[in-house]
Amino acid sequence: MQSASPGAAIGPHLPVRQDWLDRRREEIIEPDLPIVDPHHHLVDRPETGRYLLPELLADTGSGHNLTATVYLEWLSMYRAQGPVELRPVGEVEFANGLAAMAASGTYGKTQVCAGIVGHADLALGAPVEKVLEAMIKAGGGRFRGIRFITASHPDQAAWGSPIIRPAGLLLDQRVREGFARLAPLGLSFDAWMYHTQLGELVDLARTFPETQIVLDHVGGAIGLGPYAGRRDEVFAAWSGMIRELAACPNVHVKLGGLGMRMFGFTHHLGELPPSSEELAAAWRPYIETCIAAFGPERAMFESNFPVDKGSCGYAVLWNAFKRIVAGGSATEKAALFAGTATKFYRLR
Image (cartoon, rainbow, N blue to C red; front, side):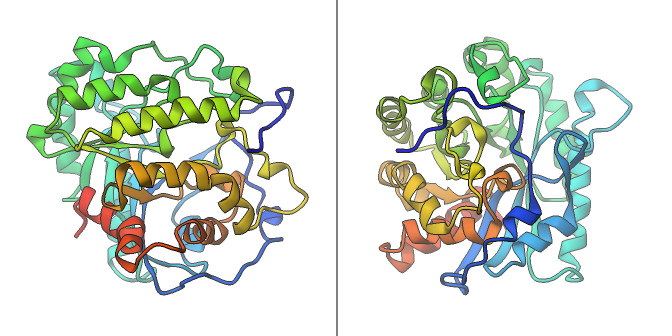
């Protein structure tokens, strides 16, 4: 398995170079297969660039049959004023406004932001319930749950992650008091952490079996810093934790995010953007391991755009996923590309 060299210059996100991406064009594989993209962001910040509705629609309209999407929080469009804990409600309001635009049909058939996942600070403990209730109200029937990122590693500067979080957040009693408020409100939990932290999620899932959880980005198998050049060793540790986590029936997994810098692949360094064959070859071990552990009924492909757009184009990414499961049945493909996401996020 290919790894990046440990001495490369590091920034928080791989830059999106549209002129570079435009150098790769592919025929769409299975163009009629319905796809629900259960993980994308919309953002307009200096450090990330602009990726709003026009940019998303350009990607979803690039050939595959995107029927709906789910919006994932990424610190976008918080309220500028008011109580700090309620400012993330602004992101739900923002996403719901875009969803209403898409629902009008003016911008095509894709139901953008059909489901919305926001951010609420679970460290508030039980009082986070008022934040969740405000998000439910702001979501116009589309708010589905929250993501509370806990990704943390002493060497995370090696892959450009600037946010330092306390270790063991999911084991913290106050965080768990907040987490306990999700299931009674019918809300799900998106988890994002590194492979070194997956044991915390196993414990959380076992403690709260009634809460629906989805692990983002195949569980963050680190490929840089102290793990550079140790891909096979990391894969062995990661895959063992994936199988343990899959034993929790309330946990699902998102198949994607592998274009992020922290995984250590080097497709972004090529003179040409990677082909779907190249991506499928590199990503197949992770995706096949997850599908084998969770089954298609608890696994869903994701784009993680625009973050992964630094490594590949949208059409090529979905072609790569289709190549990886080319031998699957029609039922399995229907689940992996749309059915599981539709069921988990309770899309209309």
